[in-house]
Length: 385
Length: 137
Image: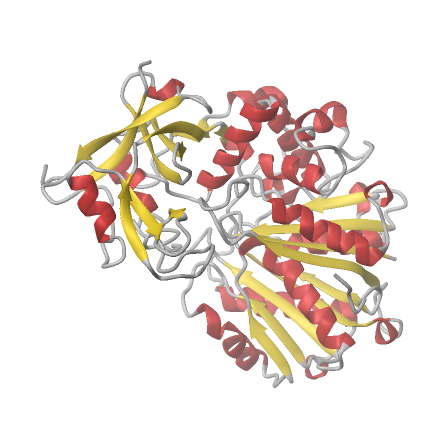
């Protein structure tokens, strides 16, 4: 496929992160507004300069498709380009791509991508409904409840086919927590060991408690503009050098759904646009809703072969100081869980060199990935200086 | 039987033959009258050829464990007496994959590749749920 290349046409110029964790009294909307204000400040922009507004609705409220109207009204802005998308954990990196396309084609000048969610303090959608997933499938009938089901299935099959072990999953958890311990914004900062992982209770075997991401409240915002305009702003611009998306919409109907073949497609497209190879990536932020997800991404992103993700993480290879530091903020496993947004923002911060105690030296090329819904959606960004 | 509190299928005109078949202890899925593709999940049109033509055909009910997980946590109070219980994706011999449970002897030791056979669990007077047991042979 030939692309009208968007390589380096747009840049991230502002990021905003609210308090994460438990935010009683805050709503999805107030968190989104808070994140937006912080990102504006980071970029040095005034709200009336924002003429593109892309939102991901919080997971705890319905009326999702109208989120862009509600947030626009709250912010008192009247953009020329806007919509709301729900792709679960791949939404953030996906919206940044839409924003880049909008600024590159002149549909908007400054696009704010915004999210706020309160799954920790408000009661989320009931997952015990028999129709969870798909009314025709009635998966709740068989007790297949909760987002963990599908990643546990992935882990089950990956272990059976390739010999991946729980201890290798544990290394992913230990590594994420080590990074979170260096991140003042992270919710879980107490270091853990492989023993802690092994002794944590089974949730949906083969996944244990410490294989699971956090459930937290929080908001986040990313502002995108053209590369030309980016040079005049307050922050260090981070170029969007590559982007890609792909989807496996079929679930049981697709033999490789559990593995996520679309994730490889999304990353490959991003690499091709950026003109890079896996070996060029200095640091990676890979969507880790569960530990197995990190292992799958390492394979899909070409850092190792199919089935080799487990051995790859051994020996501290994905820890700070290792060959490929992954999820340097602590990821969804230990930092916080605004669905993929902090993954993008950590990528921006690493490329800017603002990682503080967790900064990777020469982090000039960062891969960011998102995955979402029932293993259906994938998005990838290559961020560079 | 009437105190069954776990989720029941949302029966629609589309999926009614599946659940009616289960009550008769027949595992049946849709077969495209245009291209012959056996499909599951249940869908309005064939995802291969987009034809709406369909006939329901019985399957052998035999297959193998494609992936399986064991719930140690009850995500709804209705399942708290069931944990630990096993949910599996079953690869049926005729081609489709189905979400279900592995029940009966050895269920907690079920492994990917194990042979399984359908059993029918009449959970209420109106509803029978297909589940799978490890094959004895």
